[in-house]
Length: 404
Image (cartoon, rainbow, N blue to C red; front, side, top):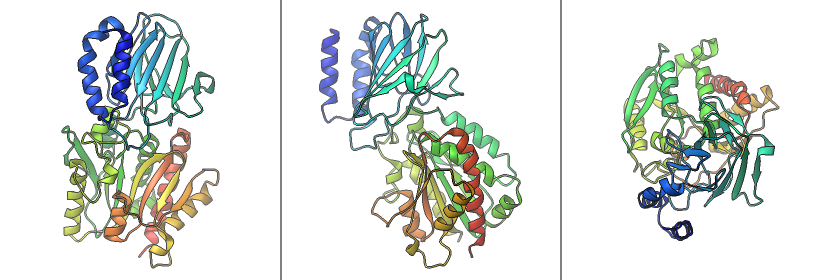
């Protein structure tokens, strides 16, 4: 099949209403024998005489990849399922040069836009943001061109840093060494990955911390780690907080989506933060079983924080009038945090309860407690995350300890 015919086939499929997951499977099968001779293939890799590009690692996803010349590559980045889907266009791939020469990458986003500024890494561990001079984004943000200098060694290009299942396993293993924490497997994802929780001893009140329901939301995940590390520090404040409250942490609710490099969904094609009500997916069912178990034991939920990322840092909360008490947790917590870091840009964003079946609405409707979506801006400086997250944690603990 000629290159032009292959491109026409791809265009026809992109314009249809079939799911992107079906499209990927079809193209991988139909074009596998073409790839070695032409250098064009759907996902996995593409190759020319100057470089090999692949996504054969956890979190990798390069969409449709094709060399248009020996050192110019075109990518078509599509969501894992047909719209509607949040336009969180994820991409992550490895470039292995064969010759030391510059390379140009052209990314076209289907049903999405260039939300994430590209990051680069030589080892998949240490990342830097590409310079403004290296990136050009079209006015409608549907197309991004990246100009990379010549390199001999392989390197990664990614929408955000890679923070994948192995990273969580290492962090949670280290955290589980804390004498008050117990590790527990709540259930399994669709692909059989464990849904892991860290839990302290039962008390009369419990605080829930959830994370990574949406795979690309890295800054929320990084903030959660720094936040939780502060909660389990050896400060007097943290000791007093843990003495009063039982704590439940489920930091990685969508491990399959993270491994697959999804924009939003789990492997069931479901936004897990819209499954708190139907409880159709095994990942959310696993968490719900633990919640029900604690309910049956008479342990009262007092706060739920769900960590996410968005374009600008904000905290989605209930309205102040939703609580019949003088002390409004969200208002006072965020006001105190702002006093300590007036230079950190974030919004306190109270919302009326909606019919959306997300974690925030479920916990408020079920328990009438503060239930907050903790959103961190995609491009917040990572050193700022390390500085500000412990302050948010400290003020959360202070306000919670003041409540009856």
